[in-house]
Length: 289
Image 1: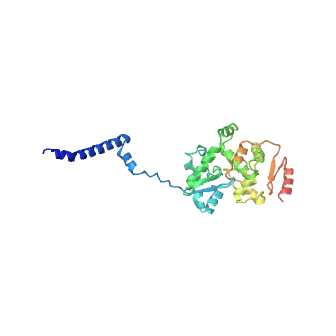
Image 2: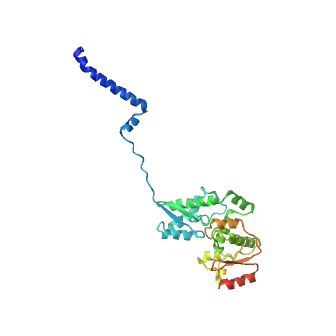
Image 3: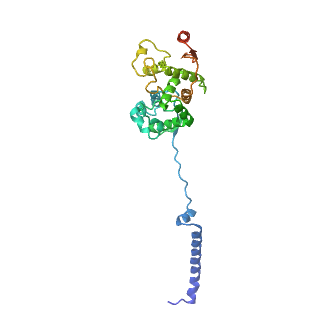
């Protein structure tokens, strides 16, 4: 086939058009590394969709027992009491030990009571009990400084002993805001009793047994055979009686030494000290009647 002069006239615009298209494509290829980027010129890429998860605030108070915590979440309709207790019981608590070295103790924990740090937590509405427990244990771990741990060791004490004592102090001593001066005095009295091989005689441990909030107990209550009865048995009880806050833990580590050997906390929240038992009895007659 021969290309005539007339055909050349018709082919010239086509050739020019094709050359223009080729040059345009070469230009785009030089500006972008892939055909996908070229497509983005013509089709605007949509930003990733952000999925928001509902959150809620929960507050665990100082001095709450494991049962108190379970009841709290049950009352909120978050989890049932049994669901919470199942996670923080002795059978389940060991599963958290690989994450938190302070749970890996020579004597198996009876439960996580004492180590669920009281605080305000912001959690997802879809959170599980396990996830909240990890948050609380992590908070406990962060609150204990290296200095505090070193001081505990230097005193010849163990962390479990400190937390058990702190749980008793949390229930026995009054706290005024961030003031734990009285708590430190109470701590000194309790540690002194242990050093002298005296019974702690803490009514808070009896309240733990009987699940009451009485400031004092008497009669058959004092003879209860529970190992948590610190009137009947010397030494610390087997485990913490509540989950103490930081002020109580600090008081357990750093007690204030005094000449006092007795104290009582009246119903008005004031605390009264005595050096001997007769003065203590007078305080009981004055302030607990």
